[in-house]
Image (cartoon, rainbow, N blue to C red):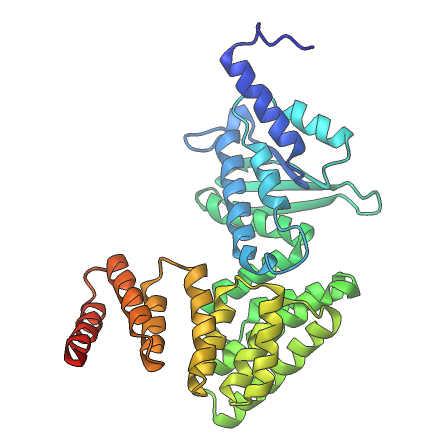
Length: 369
């Protein structure tokens, strides 16, 4: 048996860091981005540059996290690998060496950054475990005062090699925030994805294309009704293509449900929502969209089922409780309505709407007496 009595507290902590980093199962490891001592300036050291690159990689990976959670693929590799870098006890070489021997690292990233005449040159090397994949050498340059932009581009190019789908999701999110509904960077990234990735992964691109056409139809106010309908047709075509490859891909099912609900093709929408709930019963968007459609049809009792589920998924959302209370009122379940109004008011005690609804219910109760 090992005797740990001689270990100091920092050494124990270092051992724990080693064990957790060794067995997290991360498939990407970021090593230090070297900055020569002679070229270090204030705020421009190896540790700081590496951490900034890690932050950018984390931001990019988070951009796709919600969608990746709906797929049967490992979305945690990048984040876990970045965490393996964050080592304050200088055991990085031990960690990475052991994990590499055990075959646990799919991608290993390192590099350096040098400056010359107010210019920076960042070199990143991405090594792949697969012997058939070449070492990817990335070069990014720019002005010294643009180091954040240089590192950001380095992170994008690194992830584009490791997981281009994550970068495509990042572009879509940025362009959606900028209200650029033509999604030029996203479309270009999708084209690269389809050209470079195996056929069995193309369902990811088709699903994303479908959502982009759907978003353009819904949000681009410059479209004519005919153009809007064209966008919806393209959305349906691509979403169905995604489901043909991956029948349990959650997002196309939800999006098709939403599209058909908007077209008042309720039977089709109902089928897609039901499939989505079967795959992921605790996904809030599905419950809300299905509940809203059922309310439109006057199917209040069925809508209550969906909003009860929604409240269970997001119990701290007072708006969901308010909607559920109103539905309870419509079917004469006043006690249940009162409970939901009270819960909504406890969550948001300054809401005049919730207070007025509860007061009206109490007045109605007194009137019945």
